[in-house]
Image (cartoon, one colour):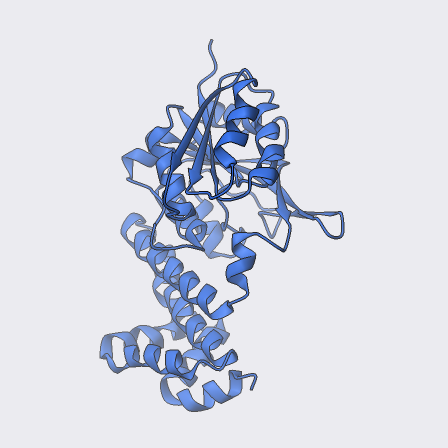
Length: 335
């Protein structure tokens, strides 16, 4: 029986030198039926030439897609999805590394379990310290049933904030029109991860560290935006809000709906206020407070009392934001 084609999508912007090791780790996969799709997101360096040189002698099927204008990682991933011909697709950041059996392990699990998506464990590599740090997708030893991963996440038993340690059945993504939000320059993976989990009926997991996320500090997009925490918080809150609305539409599980409505979405809103106060951005703080003039929004915020015994912090923050907004601002302000 022939192996199903797997498309590995690599969006790259101005990282020609760092991308060489990434591409080599993909080429070195022990999985035979592989398609490598490099999406040059309007780079100003010689990325396309470097990628072409690395890939043309690899013996791998590849596509080297280039467009002139930088549109962001979300658009680049969407372009890759449209070009992908594989039964399965996965994403690799342009400076990270795949373990040799990344594709084969996840694809095998997906085929055996007929899974919509499969994910694995990963690790961070800190370049300055030359140090590896394993990360854990599960906060407990509990592994949920294939259709209970979203519920496990609402119970904070699992973290779902990445896209690069997953493999997805392309048919599943197409069926649910799942793409990356191009309005999000960062935190796009947060929204996408939650949406795919909300739509998936069969999820599986490989308990092995197969992906290495490189921490370079100097030139990573996430670090660049991380210097402005308020901006990160705004995009993060938008991502969570969009994800929450998707989950409410997709799930019929009452406990999940209650958590999303009474905790998740409320927390996304309060997070913006908190970060604005911590960084002294009173103008943005007051702008977001205007939402509380609407009775419906006030009722939503106060509904967090339903989760008081599970997450009392959210309710107390909600009360302060509603009735003592100036005090909350001063309390959280670092100035």
